[in-house]
Amino acid sequence: MLELNQIGIDYDAPDGVATAVASMSLNLARGEIVCLTGPSGSGKSSVLRAIAGFEPIARGCIRIADEVVSTPEGLVAPECRSVGLVFQDYALFPHLTAVQNIGFGLRKLDADARTRRVTQLLEVVGLQSCARKYPHEMSGGQQQRIALARALAPAPRLLLLDEPFSSLDEMTRLNLVTQVRSILKQSGCTALAVTHDHEEARAFGDRTVAMPNPSRVQPSPDPFPARAAYA
Image 1 (cartoon, rainbow, N blue to C red):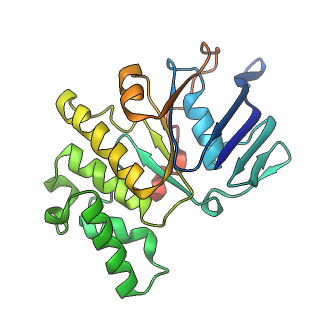
Image 2 (image 1 turned 90 degrees about the vertical axis):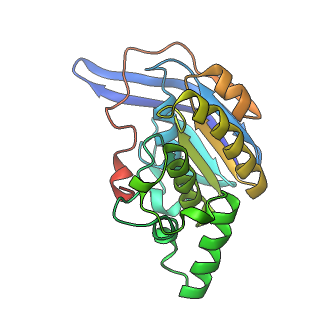
């Protein structure tokens, strides 16, 4: 479902070009959950940005479902990649209910089909009781499950999760790791998650991939500048 073939990611620096990711290869099978671990500055978020289409690559090739989406010569636009995103800060629309948040990306469906899909996903994440609640009326764990349902609503080929549990308290985090893993397995979604917590990675992923030691380049302040479309 996902293939990174010796990709490299560079940034402009005051003294020239600096390397965030020198060379990385990774394959994800359909339905597999993989966790990408490593310290800050090791390039984890840069890799997610490149897969999502927000960051060009300087070397190598990225394929999603056998489709070439990124090379040094060009890239497929993020909205054309069928990739879902889940952020650590949920990025829910504060003025929309859970139902409206989940259905936001389904505007191409007719009303009946959209209602059926949203109802199905509320059942999958176990939050039928929160259907009419606004984000501020839900707990952090509930908001993250609604964010997951929204990301799954368009049935993406691939789901990217950027530190999805780091803003939660310890008890909620431990429970949600198990719940979200179960939801992803039930949906059959292929997922790549970034985390700095090795125990979390072992509990959440089928496999863990460690990034090498960080380079001198630090990630940008907002790993996903396009999140404005979700918030």
